[in-house]
Length: 362
Image (cartoon, rainbow, N blue to C red):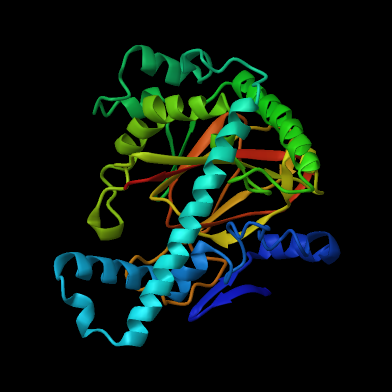
């Protein structure tokens, strides 16, 4: 196997299956296969959140700022004990962060105007009971998603895939079709904005990843879906599976949702910006991965086992002995812990859109 990304004492290798498909046409997959995009979101080591985790790099600047701010707040003469050069460095960091915050404040106003001017294609104000699968709809009617009834797993058709990974039917095929239509409609709006702003993307938007918060209508769907279904299910499924710091990952309270499109070739007008994605972990306690398409080939979701929460410097080579391949199905969601290494194999035909919901506990 060929090494795609390497971080200190940590090896990340593409699985045999992915490597074979990528090498069949290196020029076709060269830029795609890294999973890297212009936003620095999820990609080759050295350019993502995962790189910081794998290298165990402390956020030095943020640590210094927090340390200084806390010390000055607690002890009036705190800075008098500092070296002048150290204090100058802290002041420079503070000014840098203040400038960044002011810039973000201006962008926030522009972003709000941009989002409010978008006119949704569909009406998303209806109850989500009309969009979810029959099993989820029945559970909502019976208000049983909030219960600790052990039979809920069976009634929802919840399937145990492998350690820390579950799947279930979440949305109807009609709902998935509506979401895809809304995305295509929104992309026309976004592309018109980009064309009229000399190629500049809307404030806060990402070129290769559609944030649901940018799409008026779908943002309300995210909120309702999270509060009524995803949050209680995460607690039900993962509440007894403690991870980092011994806290149950099921106690999530914040979603970050986006849509990613995969295909054999780029199709920006359909949000298809990737062909495959290298092994990585998510910036989440729990991740929900929902399939929005049916007619595609390839694109298997390969899990390689959980990252060691204590000794993260252990070399991690693939294929992992616990490797598990999950095949997406329209409307069906896979639930997994964020610390599971996983990758997406190259899509060889059609388009594979997935709605990803990173769930965090703040």
